[in-house]
Length: 193
View: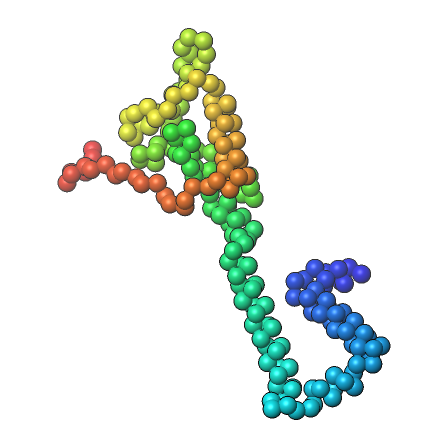
């Protein structure tokens, strides 16, 4: 029974079996109706063009029309696998003015890293307590600039970023797959010391 289920789950064999069942139903129906002699007589009789040739052309024309229809449907309807591959390639985005990098493994976001949107350098964050609550500052040590400031805990910032990434994956609102432009520093002809 398991082997039959496995064969039936296979996309090719399930179609072969279903066509065989339909063909068997057709044979049984026509033999019950007594139409076989009429069908055989028509196939082997001749008009200006042999009927067997007309039948063959009709079969190939039907197959051709089905093939064109499947091709059109394939191009119109997005495939789930392509969507899944696009989602797996989605591993960076600009969220809250910070370029975030991560690894997407089977829909799980791992290793969330904040980076500078200008130079792609990994950001460091520092906590300051000013006024009513924590003030988190994300700094780029390469550009010597403040990239973003938040009035919440670091865990809450990361949680918001995770939720934003999951929202984009769920709604398929993904950015175009292009690496961000990186501005390289110009040092002239001297090597930095």
